Amino acid sequence: MSWVFDENISYPKKYEDIAHKLAKIRSELSSNVYKPGSGKYRGDKEHWVSVTGILAELVARHCLVQMKIKYTASPFIDIQPVPDADLIIKYPDEKYYIDVKGVPKQVKEYRVNHNAHRNKNKLVTHYWFVKFLGNQRAELKFFDWRDVDFWKVKQYYTYIYIHIYIHP
Image (cartoon, rainbow, N blue to C red):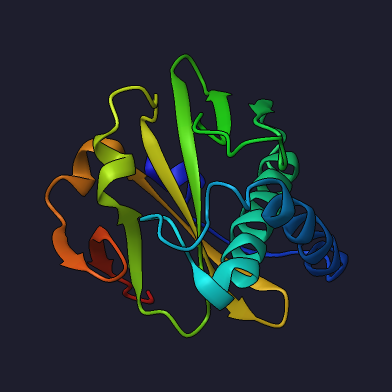
């Protein structure tokens, strides 16, 4: 079913402002989780990691609205980070538990955190990547959760699965 959710899309510029505002609040609320000394610490990149993730979720929701597909969504911000799927879609007769991932313009690979992917307490059936292209344009790519098991594993701050981004 990935062909339904693989899409090139434009999105409103105001989403970028919204993502910055929500990222500031999200970072403040989760500062006890993403703190120095923890394996999740992002240092000075914390704000941009949050902006990218929130903007990706906004764009994914925008795409679903454009396609007239109903969904439920986890909140953008909460007292603690939300480990649940970002989106749940029933389309047409199957339920998809989707983890939305933002890919900055300069990054040339799709990335999934190894530990999060292996987390048996997190129900995710698919990953939906939002690759930002600039000028409020994005390319969306849908992957089955099981596909990620065959991706290369690499270590950055933590271990991650990577798949090279290929622009069609």
